[in-house]
Length: 200
Image 1: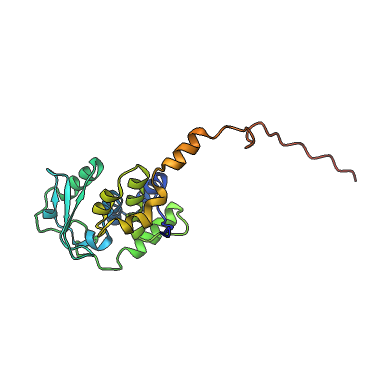
Image 2: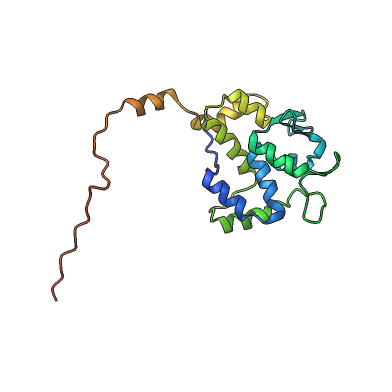
């Protein structure tokens, strides 16, 4: 199976990006990082789709056409608890600053601006936030079947294509545990020699 080189943000980049977002866009980016949901899925979310008792979001209209449940970890539950407070069940959660619904391209400009401020170069698309969520799960050893359900993949083939190379590996763990230290990598013991004086 060919390995897809998926770009994702590390923890430091996630924090920088969130901090660099304009206020009306910041929670949308937080939501994407904490759920792995697509931009279109976020823009359709209503308060009624959030079940904080069960800690899940119901995606009623996904890319596959089938509904799915997205599990919220603790930080995600805190975010959505704040976002839905005092709102009606039919209210959209992520809207434009003027309260209107977000269109298909309304994430492009604010994402480019946030990347510039956060010094993330080349800039990322909104979809990379979804890959960041999936990559974070894979690197912590979450089974591909679980990641596939969280992201709404039909089966694990797409999940493995994108994230298999990031998953903890028995082979890699064994090599790192048993390969001897040869002491040849260099490091702090290397001292720069002063340049010889030049004669005129």
